[in-house]
Length: 126
Image 1: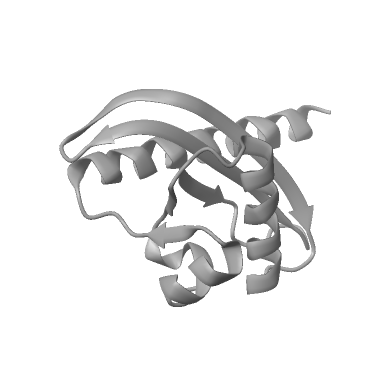
Image 2 (image 1 turned 45 degrees about the horizontal axis):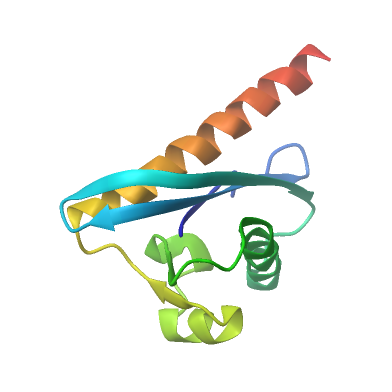
C-alpha cells in the first residue's frame, strides 16, 4: 500500500491531515492497475510521531490487511528508521526505488492533496 499524508503543517491552531492509502498492482517500471483507494481525515492539535503512527494504523485497519508492505516517502515518519516504523506498524515499510513505486506514491499524493483541498474549500463556503 502506498501512503501519503497531506496537511502536515499547522493552520489556524490545528493540523488538518488527510491520509491516502492506495493499493496497486505494480511492476518496476509502471502501475499495472489501482485496486483500491481509501482516505482518512483527521483534525488534531498535535503532530507527533505517535499521532502519525496511530493514524496510519487506523488507515491500515480501514483499508484492510491485504497488502505486503507500506510504501512511503522517507519523511512521512519524521525520517525515523524504516526498521523501527516497520516494527511499530507490524508491516514492512519501504521507500521507493523504482519508477512504479514512485508512481504509486504520486497517486497517493494526488489523492490526499486533492481531497484536503476540496474539504478546505467546502469549509470556507459554510
